[in-house]
Length: 201
Image: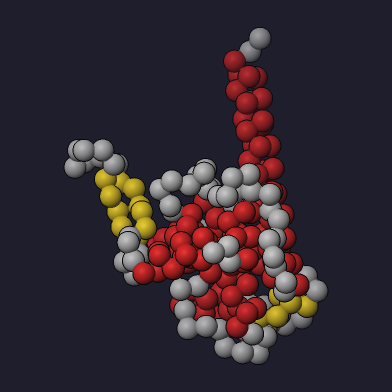
């Protein structure tokens, strides 16, 4: 399993401290992919830009897809741009892949057979490994979980990260998630102002 898949399974825990938005999760998944690609040597960072690392991507279809999408000519893509581009609808892509692999199951809520469906992690070795990684406080996973606010407040701190490239990616994910939240708040304010305008004095 990859860091991104572990992160997705953790985010689907039926009892998280708070639900995570699909946009936030997609950005974090893109960051997790980038961290795994850096770890494998398939990607390297040139300052704040994502460059090919010369080694093959790990044998995972989604990581292979991410690596294949690298911009290989200089100037390379900025980390922030990578996160937004690769992260587009990435949570839905991971959900479909994990459902196909039997890592997620669909259950109906309530007692009625025609109640609404919800998706939950299946009781698999992969889910248990992801939970163990989180329980052990594995630094990369812990940092990404924190960015998503699944550990409570979501400070965005990078607990125990020693690799500069990984720290840079986690910080970029944090900034992107904060930017997305600012966009949401601005839209909420604009929509409320529009509704008040139509309502009149």
